[in-house]
Structure formats: C-alpha cells, structure tokens
Image 1 (cartoon, rainbow, N blue to C red):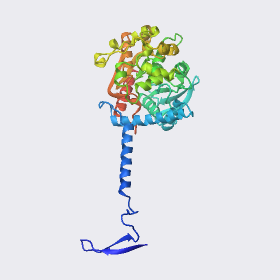
Image 2 (image 1 turned 180 degrees about the vertical axis):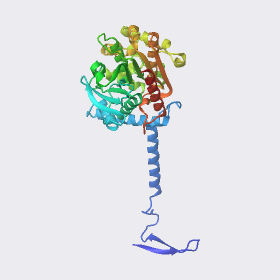
Image 3 (image 1 turned 45 degrees about the vertical axis):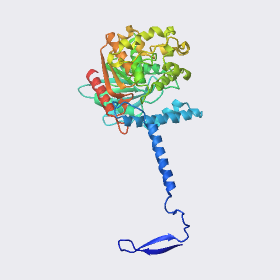
Image 4 (image 1 turned 30 degrees about the vertical axis):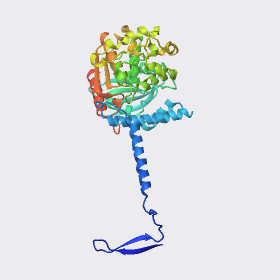
Amino acid sequence: MSSCRWQQPAGGLWVASSFPSRQPAGEPSRAQPSRRTMRSSCVLLAALVALAAYYVYIPVPSSVSEPWKLMLLNAVFHGAQQVSNLIHYLGLSHHLLALNFIIISVDKKSALSSARVKVTDTDFDGVEVRVFEGLPKPEEPLKRSVVYIHGGGWALASAKMRHYDELCTAMAEELNAVIVSIDYRLVPKVYFPEQIHDVVRATKHFLQPEVLQKYMVDPGRICISGDSAGGNLAAALGQQLIQDVNLRNKVKLQALIYPILQALDFNTPSYQQNANMPILSRYIMVKYWVDYFKGNYDFVQAMIVNNHTSLDVEEATALRARLNWTSLLPASITKNYSPVVQTTGNARIVQEIPQLLDARSAPLIADQEVLQHLPKTYILTCEHDVLRDDGIMYAKRLESAGVEVTLDHFEDGFHGCIIFTSWPTNFSVGIRTRNSYLKWLDQNL
C-alpha cells in the first residue's frame, strides 16, 4: 500500500506524488539505484573500456594505412589465436587446425559463378584447385592465365576463402583470364616440402597442352603468382620449373606479393623496424617457419637473435653471404640498423632443421645460375612489414642475374593488405595494391 498527498509547486499547478507508507528513514528507494550501485557500474564500465583499449591498442606508425582500423583487425585475429591456443592447451585440437577452422568458417565462400566469371572447384593431378574463367572474347580466342597460390604461413587460409575468391574473381574479370587458385595441403597435416610438391604437381598438370587447350589458354601467356607464404611457394615453383628440362611450356612471368624468402636472418632492417607490427610480428613469423619444418618451439627465441646462423655454424656461413643486406639494400632502407651476427650460437638448430638452408624453402639463397633463367618478375613490398627486405633483396639479386624486375613499394602498406578490399576489412592501401598488381599483369601478361 502507498498513500498519496498533494503538493503545490512554484508554478501554481497541483500535482500528486506517491510515497511508500512504511519507508524507514534513511533507506534508499527501491525504484531507483543507489549511488553506490551507480558508482560500481561506472567503475566496471570504465574498467571494461580500459581493458578493450588495452587489448586493441598497440603502437603503430601514423604512416601506416588507417592505423585504428588495422588495430581492430589485429585484435580480432589475435583473439582468434588466443581461442585456438586454449583449444590446443585443452588437448582438443592442434592450435593451427583450430585457428584455420575459425578463419575458414567466418570467411568461406562457395563456388558460385557470376555473370562474368565462371568458377569451378576441381583437382589437378590430385591437388584441389578453384578455377576462375573470364568470359571469352571473339577477337581473342585464347586467354592469358595466372596460377595463384594463397598465403597463410603454409598453415592457414584457402583458395575458397572470400578474400582470395574476390581477388581471383577480380583478376579473371579484369584481365579476361583463367585463374587457377591452388588449394595446397597445409601444416600440420603435411610439412615441408609437401606444399611445394602440391603446387608443382598442380602447375605441371595445368601446363599440359591438352589441359591448356581445354581452358582455351595461350601457352605463351602464363604467370605464376602468390602472396606471403604463397609468394614463397610461387618463387620456389618458378625455380623448380626452369630446372625441369622435360617441361614443354614455360611461364612468361612471376608476380610475388610480399613474399617470404629466407629464414637465415631475422634481423634485417625490416625485421628490426617492424618486429611488433600487425598483422605479422617477427615472433609469429619465426613460429610459422618452425611449424613449416615441424621443428621445436624451444628454438624460436634463439632463431629470433640469429643463433641458428652464427659464425660457428659452418653450413650457414656461405649462404648468409647471399643475403648480405648491407650490400643488397639501399641506404634509405639500412639507415642506422646494424647486422646481428652471433659469434657462437646453437648449431643444433640447423642440425635438427636442415630445411632452413634449403633453397626450396628460402628462394633468396638460390644459386645465381638458377636465378638468371627466371622470367620477368614483379615484386610488391610494404613498408610496415617484416618481410619487406626479403622482397627488396630478391629483386636486387634477380637484377644482378640479368632478370627484368619491377619492384612496387607501398609506404603505407602492411602485411596482408592486398586481400583487404571489401567491407568491413577494406583499406585504401589494399585497393591501391590490388589495382597496381592488376595493372602490371594487364600490361605485361
């Protein structure tokens, strides 16, 4: 029960007000929160905001494209990594399988053909591929073609992901080309060199005259391409193909997008400058290498400081001379950075992971005699990327070997940006890198 009384406010109008009949003095009304509750809520809200800001914010250069959007994207990816690590810790699945499941589940796109591009999922010699066919033109009965290899640290992503589907669809449509996107097997189901075997096998199948004829492809207008780990596999594929004396059709071009090219020196200027940059930090990159080789995680910290290629590791000394960045990089890149060369290190790392010194995993250290036979090359690099100097050094070595090279550098670029062109992960630098890449292909293929 409550009683009612009438009160006359200053304005002269009579209004009714209700009040509890048995409200003890000093007790706050149950209809309104107490000041203590409100203070607690504010403190909790402030704490949550601070926690979110702490999780999202990482120091990034203001010169990188849309830094806050990049921080948010990195926080989402980092969150997925944390979940996958928890799943691994609980013994439910390997962390890379869990992470890839999350990525693919969120980003997978079915093979739906558009009005301008026919999309088909098939296999080439047992290797899954997604083929994108642009509409034929009466004046050009034969099409040009790109064999594309997706990135993801040899362990993540897929040709069937929306981001790669959109990239390859754009290539097929704008170039009026046939794009073969290879879905090679991933770590931890297979390890080096199985990924290379997959891309070589699928590409050789595609290069057969009868297969090219089926897809109406001009055998003289074929490019191999890939980004990140896919760029690594594309570079290795290019070196494998030119050494195959039985291969009838050769590729015309190779186009490498921020490729991974070596695991001998994790202290190049770009590794030092961008050690903690999203989307790919130095620590994560070294872990990808260790995973690729099924190595021991205990080696990661030692590899970060180049203990695996110290002066007392004889197998590595001669090869390190092939990526002497003090002579391969311009002064605008080297700046005041100093090489990190350990006098004594951990020879056990190379003994247990000899693949580190294999040119198939590290195309940058290939012999000059191999490099000189490679086709005309495009290399895209980003300023805010640990892999920047891998690409620049490879361009220099190729030029020294007599190969025509286009080095396309983006000052506000970051690792992975070329696939981030559609909402909500659309970046201006993603659109510009994609347009520049497609323009070069259109002009040279």
